[in-house]
Image (tube, rainbow, N blue to C red; front, side, top):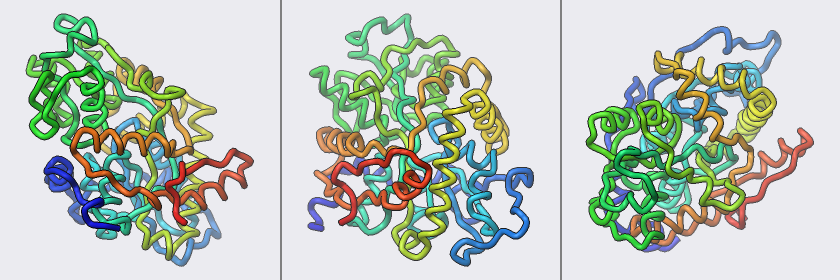
Amino acid sequence: MPANRSTLLRRGLAAVAALPLLTLAACGYGSEAKDDSSNQKVAAGAEKIDGLDSVKIGYFGNLTHATALVGVQKGYFQKALGATKAQYQIFNAGPSEIEALNSGSIDIGWIGPSPAINGYTKSEGKSLRIIGGSASGGVKLVVNPKKIKTLADVKGKKIATPQLGNTQDVAFLNWIAEQGWKVDAESGKGDVSVVRTDNKVTPDAYKAGSIDGAWVPEPTASKLVAEGAKVLLDEASLWPDKKFVITNIIVSQKFLTEHPKAVEAVLKASVDTNKYINANPDEAKAAANAQLKVDSGKELPADVLDPAWKSIQFTNDPLASTLNTEAEHAVKAGLLEDPLLKGIYDLTILNKVLEAEGESTVDDAGLGVQ
């Protein structure tokens, strides 16, 4: 792959990749999930998958990663892996999860589209593959209704996004450009002030009045609403069929090549979890919240959990065409040089699992491996 097409055009995404790690553990990348013996029991007579002692799985502690949350809480991953232990790490930022994947600290992870694109392009297509979908939607523009009553009122205001160059940041910059407004992508200065703020502190920033709104994923959006903010725009309304990728499943290429049976087991667990979520939304919502409490010590109150959950769709489809569009948005914003994404997907094992389950196979939008 030519270097000038695989490197970052400007400091934006490079800065994201160099951000300090937000949660630390012994391995240095993510916090270890607590081992709840009730959902990690190995069935009698179970055997190891591919001879592996463990498979290391990463995810974020938020509702857009609820497939992972529910899969852990209900024991789907451990059941599928037999006597191979499912080990978990929780992350707060995509760059740290990509670094963990590259180092071998995790094997498979749930992650947003922008970090997946960045990880793939920075490694010149050698680090990872997207092997499945997980969630769509769950991103909103929420604002202070006293200061912003219409979309036009966003001009001149201070709006938070989670991180320079992250998935929501790119989406907001693209939306700004579509309004005909100008913002410098790196500094965030212009017709709108884009304030990069960690989701953990965004509600406090809103309460303090240092921001007028935020373009953020759930449950941060609903946390702001609970503080008096109003939803001005649901990002889903900007996409065909109101669907766009918010969470994918990635795997290191080395692990995929060496342990396809283990990858298949994790994907089967993911498919089974999504089936459970969609068939039992209330029970699944409770399971996700229970796992959030295990991982972080806190569960979400009902006035945050309920509206947040309703805005997320759980799907095995990676919605590959929308990932390609999101990459185009990053290019338009000047944060990414036109990337070569051919080969970022390998949906072979997922489609095998879906066929065995009697479900429809999914498409890679021409971005799959040869």
